Length: 264
Length: 367
Ligand SMILES: [Cu+2]
Image (tube, rainbow over all chains, first blue to last red; front, side, top):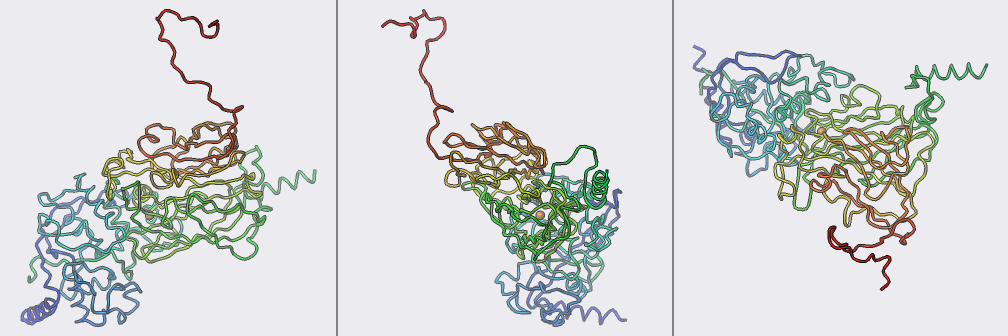
């Protein structure tokens, strides 16, 4: 019985988002057994990733603009400081307008983890957890796991460095991966739901000199990764794990995931 | 007896509160903190005036410990690696190397690190002059748009490397994120006429040496430790031609030379010169009459030379391929009158091949 109103609501909401930004499309990602690139302490982690659906592309500026217009409490200037710092959408022309001619194709960045989560929530979706993101991003156009491809790694790292000092590029310039997902690796860093748990022993206190987890990201980074020579991944994990959930960085955006059975 | 006792107590105190000596042989005076030398900071905090390389801040004339505030900013910048070649550098203050920091043994150094709003990566700083876990790295991690600060007491004099230690550290260093900090001994270093700051580092680019355009980092070359470029002060030609270092005959020059690496040990040499005085590891040990100094990644040397003849002197990493094919070359132009007693040309002429009929000996010729 309560199914109908939910679907109606969802459809209305999607229609609203679609007005300005175009509705996000979710594509199915088949699950599977997966060895994470992150170590748990010194242990290799093998996870069984359940099938899920993921947004084909990162959330765009236009889509996020539609969201904040519809949910004013997530607008810059109105958002509670508990949920976002001063950098939140700082580059936007107004609290509801990115002021970017490429807004429909540029990934939104400068959003806090809380705001990203709220956006996904509004679609009855959620932020991917790290293993989901990692699993999805491991695929190239023909392989489920292309992580060992040195040329690909090299190209990903080069793309990330190439972006020095610039705003993120536009979505869709590169072919989709085997699941139909685009721009997971080379455009931006993406929030994950469990970002605070990327290093399980993290005490969250950067001020404590000698904090093991932090040191693992410094000189001891070799201790944190199964393959320490996967530099692009190390850059990503370093960039994400240093963020507090209120931080907003001009290079950090997000996309959402949901149950594969959920309404499209 | 009383004096011996006092000395013993001072030594014991030194070992407890400071680095102190852990063995019998005496440390050179003024290079390591003692309670007498390194008490509480005095006077107002001093804000360090930072200069781009190869500039060196002036020697410290102050003879008491102070608090020195050092403001640094991590900046990701697109810059010139060689003529026509660009690279995405990670830097401190926009230059490779970052500015040289100069403090005095016993100073309390406050490092304030900002990360530029336009940056993408978190950065931090690990100074080898620090006695403390991570050299400050864990207490200075800053995401773009943030700043962090920490303080340390400079317990040991010497020339030290600082660098970003953010994961993957090899990448941050390979992108140019390093510099040097001099902790002067209590009475300073011997006075010289000119001081220069030079730092070696390698770059690993996708394109071959001097291939034009914006060159991305080549991860495979980095992992194989096979750089495309080995340069002084961040680019080919930073110290040649119009950027050559200059001095006058009769002057004594000092090089604060550090190696950012990330991987290669430098064989620091001046073609046509012998270092009169060298602090080979950048520490208190002093050596003389040295041709080439081995400087490891994350290591330093201080090298003095009295310039006795004029000319253009080449500053090199004597690993020959690096100087001829990878860019590790600088110039010191010395002006002044020729000194034929010290160095002069004698002749350059053909001589007969061996096996030909002996011509009359020129020297005994009666023609
Ligand atoms: Cu860095």
